[in-house]
Length: 276
Image 1 (cartoon, rainbow, N blue to C red):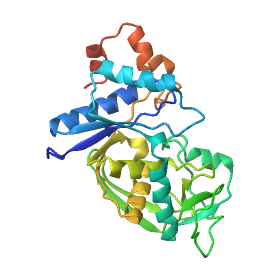
Image 2 (cartoon, rainbow, N blue to C red; image 1 turned 45 degrees about the vertical axis):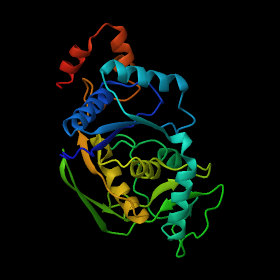
Image 3 (tube, helix red, strand yellow; image 1 turned 90 degrees about the vertical axis):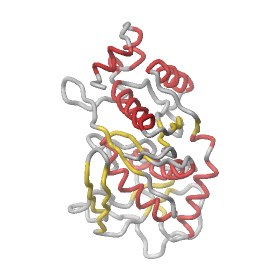
Image 4 (cartoon, rainbow, N blue to C red; image 1 turned 120 degrees about the vertical axis):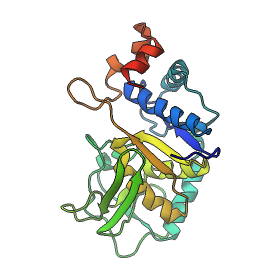
């Protein structure tokens, strides 16, 4: 674990629903690690999903975090940072690392929100729109994919989950992920691109998040290298699941922090439930 006073972590909720127990556990761990390192935390409002983001959820997530006793020193809102994402995308275009893609709307929508390994992680792309010559201009009303190197291993050591190794490429039968969406024709970046641009701008030294995002970390490492950005350390927490073994999601309203608060549970009882 980083022990420098320069430790910088972040909380990155999206205002598309109420926070649940899984969020609480991850964010409390993030705060514990920041405090142990004598560092600070950012709150990043990941509000780029314009179809589902709601102002009332943005208010609720801040209230629920404060109720948990979680504090942060600085804030960022992604919807304020579109010029920074476009600049990064233009850099990828100029370097010949992306190409236009005309695949289905379903694939494109899956790239807007943080993917989840056990349910709707972006599928391995088979390279249908790959062309010999990469794009050299960022065109309006066009979707773009980042071109990975076929059969390239992407490796990193996670501070919680240990050594990780993923193979990228468009050979569906042997790859963990393929060319992935970085830009949508509506002028918005994918989760992967926005995440690496923001982590660099915030000088994040350690990312604490769920293990459903391990594969996303591999994608983000490739983007960091292509953009010349520094790579933080990663700590991927175990996922919380319901009584049926299903990963908690915002659809689990009975386990939302707001519902639990209204039921009268105390923060101490909640922390005991989370084994923190």
